Length: 201
Image 1 (cartoon, rainbow, N blue to C red):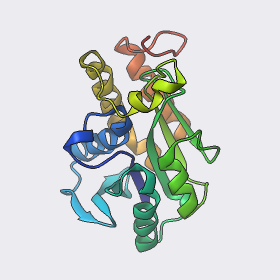
Image 2 (cartoon, helix red, strand yellow):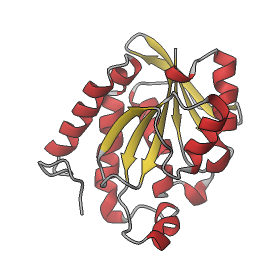
Image 3 (cartoon, rainbow, N blue to C red):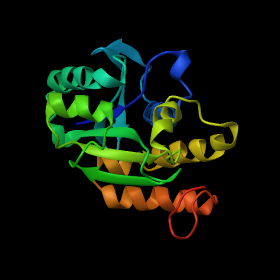
């Protein structure tokens, strides 16, 4: 059994923020694979379904980003899911737009959602890092992540979420490198990455 956590802030005000790309990714997984309707529990919303014969619970914490770990711990404890079977979808400033990396453990790079999760369940969970690009100036970071994606960004955001959903079964099966490769190739084919793997400038 797997727990897939999308990170974001609850409410319509934040729905299209760059910080909410984790929510967008798990919502697309639920849509694409016919998961059960979302319901409120574990200080968030969950939807359940199956990927590659693996039972998967999707979770969107409703605690705001800084307290995401509370919802993750509650859901993980209820289903008896170890940290190694938790996958977190997060926005990543240090990756170019549309670039994806998957890693287990490691640092939190100042991400408050990861900081909260690590403090509640330890550090051994999988992170799916979704590149949103860096504004280039440290002082602009807060505004950048809490601003909506620009209209010009929508095509690559939708393509990225679709590619994640299409290949989510590979994550459920523990085939991280195959997942990352297939998502990369999908974005490359649509012209949202160049041959070097860099995202749109």
